[in-house]
Length: 361
Ligand code: SAH
Image 1 (cartoon, rainbow, N blue to C red):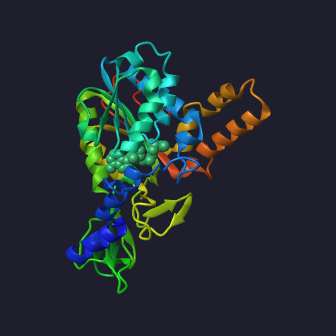
Image 2: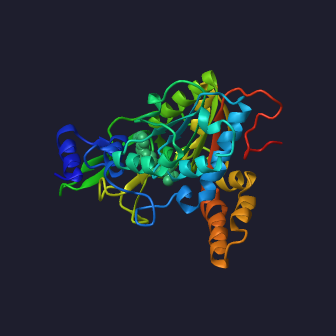
Image 3: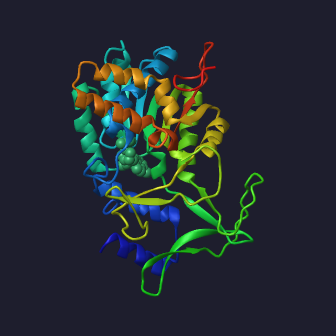
């Protein structure tokens, strides 16, 4: 039975399926989920992420993590974590770039948060040359205690959201039902919800999104960082201020597709609500920096200088490719503006608590 047929059967017996349930099943169902069964990333996959664009991305993040580790007083051991590492490219570039930082690899306990058995295997292969023991956890809650330095690139956008649509009087939850032909269709649930919107006035048709899974992850992360020390970088596409809008999207073979058409065969994501994540982290006692745009962040970390060193002495074609990668990662019209970067840290001593890449003025 296809995943679509299983979802239809569930709806026929249980009633309309909330969007978060639909998203979770499509992405992580053990038998037919998109991440569990497919190889989403890369030219031959469905989408390309920043670490797959250029090695410079992971290298700069590696140096950021090492600088924070030094700022923390070089804790040994510490947990070096990545959430949703994909093919392991970011971490491989980060580890290569930090080889020369005395004691960093020796102190690191590498932990990867991953649901996909197939991607776990790719991560093992990508990282085995570094000789570090690798632990895997299915959720961030499965990580061991201790100071934590980590990163999640395009992880939070994969966590399931709920959507509420204003019908002119109240918000109703969007859910997935069946039409007369048995096809999956969006509808609105019967229960009116009175959402707290901080004064914003909705118009009929406006949509509010809520990602409880992201808040759950952030609450756990911020609490442990506030209590045990550390720093974590969230990089993702999203919005810095709350607002109305439907950001639920499906991509297959580098093109947008109907999110209900091919359950388990398309990547489903939603934009990350950074202000709500930031508020959650602060409530849990952590310090939040940014969000800043990915362009500002990478240029602040020295992307252009890194590109210059990487291109030095190379032929024209390789240099052009490096320039194109800088544009892709940091250009306003490419990933530079839509993608945001936020850091969550614990209390750090010293006169300059803002991490590299965030406004230090
Ligand atoms: N960071 C990588 C991959 C991004 S794709 C890159 O930038 O290239 C999202 C990653 O998160 C994949 O590795 C996917 O398998 C993982 N993932 C998605 N949902 C998850 C969940 N609920 N729990 C753990 N990992 C998840």
